[in-house]
Image 1 (cartoon, rainbow, N blue to C red):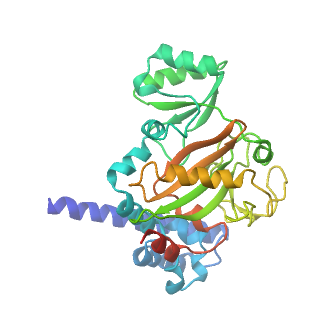
Image 2 (cartoon, rainbow, N blue to C red):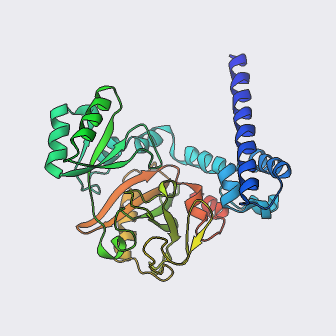
Length: 334
């Protein structure tokens, strides 16, 4: 038993060193961070070991310019995961990870049609796709938008491939395609552009909003998150207007949407009061979930809950406005 624990720690240490060496070379070589590779590697490694950042935190939060004291103000990867585990627990975490169980638990706020292939026959899968004409396919064993794609009923080859994968045990969630209201669809017509609302529910049952962010696609993909090439912009909680330029994973900022050219700062999110009220209601459905990033869609037929994220990504919480929120998070959860 002791030997296995030591071996596990060695593997973790090796992975940390490998990742920091790889990304220090990438950032230095590409000029993303103006620093020689070796000193950058040691500083990135020190940052991860001392304050729990990872290679992406270091880059996105501009840690190369900050002291350790300043870095401690940020919600880092390890702090984020630890906080989520402490304030939600394994059972709640598993509920949110399982997209089908999540949809069932929040069925009063998930109005779109959906099908869990784990409990469906091949005929039921075909009928579901044909009835809707097109569906969103969400693999159940992936996260962060990986593997999600749009499937049309006319794509017989892709449907056959999907059915084969399901028979092999690669299950997924099939969902009805939703359309944004005109104001949000205009920003990027091919993706469902969603609002990320991060809620903190403390032990006294008091609810706080940590941040509100708009996620927008910037390609012809149906995905709006940053991993899929999307951009994010901060929403002023009081007014519902975009209050920051959009940012992507390469730390590039855009005053105008990179695909449609729409000016972002000051752009009004419609029905803002209703969005916040919707977020308040869903936050109390599962009161054991104290720290959640909710993805909410303003659709042509109403407000729709897309999913809940435990933990919400620490990047999207802080990178848009470049303001660290660790103190605020701890205060809201106290």
